[in-house]
Image (cartoon, rainbow, N blue to C red; front, side):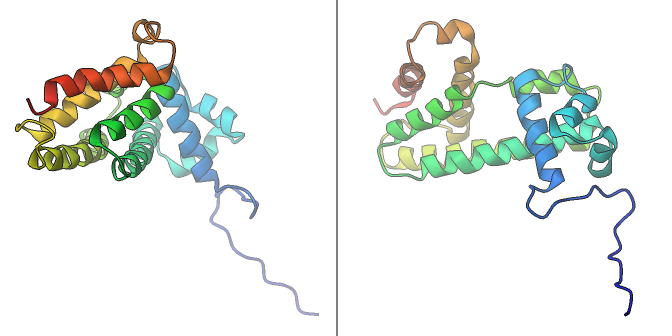
Length: 206
């Protein structure tokens, strides 16, 4: 009988059961969730490795350092947010109703403020890292601005800068992260509606 050939594997590459989620996907999803919940400084690669059930060396196989993992994790999170926001904004209904749905989803999943995390991590991040994160972030602003521009053309919103409105709406949504704001309302739905109402009063066509 001829000996079976062994399938060569790159040295150091983590093993993977065919029925399991790819290790890199586990790492990036876990890192995104952990960084967004606890910020940059509070989390170490060892902690992320422990949550994933892998060694720190496994993380280093895919990501050269914490800054690179952080950048990839935030890009991943922003890409998911863009996909979810696009689905909601492209759905049927009045713009105001769609904005309320976007606000509710954002408020129902509280997380660290991106600017706060970047401030914590700035000494560790390169210009390339920051540019990658900003590019992913601006995809969300561009998406909102497109819908605001359409609403302006249809007479639903007053004429102005669609991009400025996109930034204003995103800033208002961050209020939903604050405990002081959450305590004013009995439900996420009420808080979302109030935030959108505040935005709408300033942006709607008079």
